[in-house]
Image (cartoon, rainbow, N blue to C red):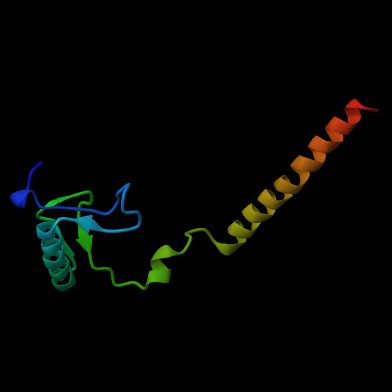
Length: 101
């Protein structure tokens, strides 16, 4: 799907990792779309892009990145994983030792 003058922007690239990459026209249109999103809370890109929309979020960074699980469930999961990581090698070593006894 070709959009305005084949301008383009990508949020992922094999050459430029962790970067926003685009041609001059695409980056200028991205800037315009970001300004529109700030004013209207969201915007759709008018250029070739690997994303569908630009959204101006109201929540803080940490609030949007937190786990949805309650802390007690996270603790139980971490405890189970820690026990598994400790018991698996011990049981494997004991099994190999039993071959020689």
